[in-house]
Length: 360
Image (tube, helix red, strand yellow):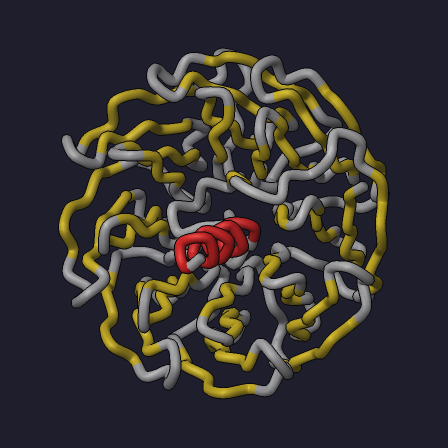
């Protein structure tokens, strides 16, 4: 009986999407509670402000930061508001992270907020030097977040007290990815860095040669990310070197979208209006799918399906092996935020202030 309870508890954890990209490795892959083949709109939440922050889902509650500075908790089943927390400062791309009964998010004045997940009451705040667009991640008893003051911070999850600060040489826009006690960050200083979580010591760095806003995807010993140098890299973290790079043969545009993996392919959006699928081992192009505007939304994967928004105001479901469009929904306003998947539902927000929930 104890093993059964542990197994069911583990399944419940897998069904959650508690942070940007769903998990510490930033894979954007749903492993439980997959959406149905035929999606329909279940509810729309009207926020009235642009959403660049992406939703997260924990225990049947959606958490998201609005452009006006509100952090909102929405019931996943009904779309009704549970609570609002006011930062009184605009929130940009920073997406909430939920763990240990707390919600964490950064604002554009550089403050990291620790909020009680049950009632939306503030517990603590921590001030960095300037704006936070990076999404926080929870690693044990600490929360990690990057700041445009060129630093990666680790603060205590319960108290907000700073435990260490790692200084890079450029703003840290991306969200840190975590594996085996190490945080991996891409930066505007054109470096991919590995930083030990216990003490903030740098373990190694690899030059990417280009400004990077996308967050790294970690799979085994490999990291994958696109850059503003119009390339996508596959980095061998054990060898500490780039093993492949991809650039579209004709269209030279930056990659701002973070990647996911499905059907053995690294999949991400580009500012060339396309979704790109690359062979994970070689970096060779497998397929592209063209939308009507730049694709800054980071895709989510569930089974062999890819869920992604576009600035053309549409939300797409694509077949991962082939790139064929399976379904689309016209929201009417740009979708640069990234979808979250949990309990058979897909939640995404648009720049006209709406949160959409799709399911059966």
